[in-house]
Amino acid sequence: MDMHRREVLKAGGGATLYTLLAAAGFLKPGDALAQAWNKGAFEAKTLDEVVKALGGAAPAQSKDIAFVQTPDIAENGAVVPIGVSSSVPKTESIAILVEKNPNALAAVFDLPAGTEPTVSTRVKMGQSSNIHALVRADGKFYVATKEVKVTLGGCGG
Amino acid sequence: MADPMRIRASVVGDATEVKVLMNHEMETGQRKDSAGKVIPAWFIQTVTATHNGKPVLAAQWGPAISKNPFLSFKFKGGAKGDKVQITWVDNRGDKRTDEATIA
Image (cartoon, rainbow over all chains, first blue to last red; front, top):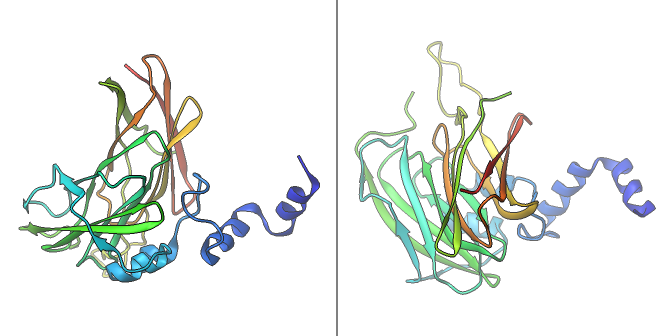
């Protein structure tokens, strides 16, 4: 390869540089798939802060985002299945947020072209809360919200 | 080294459905032990999936993902016999990669 890359690696360690670039907003999460962990977004407390940390402005409500296999009432807050399916064209990433958790953001999934905009996982919920599904499509943010009631919290000791 | 993941990949219609079950504590950093000391956070931060070496999913996770995480997603273009590889990295820098063949 070229010398420049070597110099950069020597200068600061690739990972550190990458983190700095990502934090400064030079790299969008979708650009490189082995991306650095977005610390700011995961420390944010509210939906608006998360969107900001992910590099967007106020998200629009969307009816094209659906929750699949997501219960209205979860018996055990430690294991709440959440599935999100987006029919917004050009969906690039899907994030799952739990409004009343200590840190709202639970997960961000970056979807390269060819991957269907449907993901499901399981999250912890401290208490009954709104779940937000945040979708980035063509650079814009869209959100859908669903309330999930929890009968037994998942964050207790 | 952590325990292996269980990965199941199967062709459903024109897409490949991948289901992964990982073995990880996913400690939030919010809990306290019996002596009242905070148990340090320990959770998977990034998950990447590739199909025949081409990335099909990249995820960043916070500690709010459940213990022994489950993940499922679908991508187009997989065929029987292809390899799907999943890698996770946690906040202590531990990582694990496992591979499955599409059935």
